[in-house]
Length: 398
Ligand code: NIG
Ligand code: FE
Image (tube, rainbow, N blue to C red):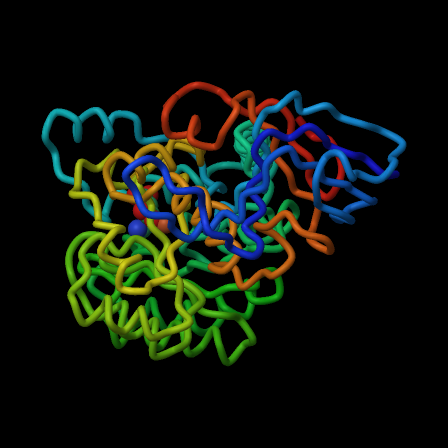
């Protein structure tokens, strides 16, 4: 089945960066979004078959008239924790009254998650995915990490694998209460029996390398054990304060280090010279009242950045990529083009995927039609639902 989306006023391809038209008084700059105007996209099956000028578009069985509105690639949300029980609204409310965020809050979600049935967790997970699709997210990475025992961690990665190929084993999220003051013994469990049970369902191994969670030597053990089992590393680090997690991630060739709220100059230099993406999570700073990292400093230094929601019941309970884009533009000093690129092609890079995040022939047909004439509206109209239609693998899903 061939579907032609035509009369696209502004098409963000993320392919072949071009030079932008200069605005009055400004110099022309590189357009990292590879923007086309008056464009059309042809979908054939689950892939994009053709991209070009609307007046040169090929025939198709179905034609969608975008009526001059904007089209972007589906968002690639490369960091989420969607399989859990309970919520922590009271903790959020207390934080807004002045309490500080701490890693230990994770443990209250662990109790609720262990108590939930597979069907309860599955229904909740499906609800989050529907919510995300409606906001333009067509790929999502999902982590375990609220089980912290062998049986529950296995359930979480298994349930996540039912809905995405981007599954991350995060048994080393925090040390559970039953291992209090025995962190090394818990790492033995994570790198032994728990990894054996979870690795068959996962692509990625992750660790929360932070004061209050896991030390650098413990994190190294977790990541190296995962790598030895064929998993690829990604790391939570420098969320609550500076640390050595970024350097560890770069040394081990991690696909991404996530958070990076507190980065030293050495961290930035190491990232800029590496193949590791820095995944910024604006929802976390928003919802924990921490300072926003300066994305301008990172991008200007040559770091590849991604944007993700980090949907979880503790530090960031938004599932909205448009919201994260708006905050990144407003408070992290990203341009709109950089933020959209980071939320699509950046997320794909953070997941080491070359088949998503761009609108070009051969890519998966993951496409979003906005109820707006340009992508700028995603940041300009925060909180407004601007997604009109979504295709995932060529199928209309919204
Ligand atoms: O990515 N940093 C660690 N993990 C989550 C928070 C989990 C929680 O508070 O429940 C995060 O922010
Ligand atoms: Fe996280």
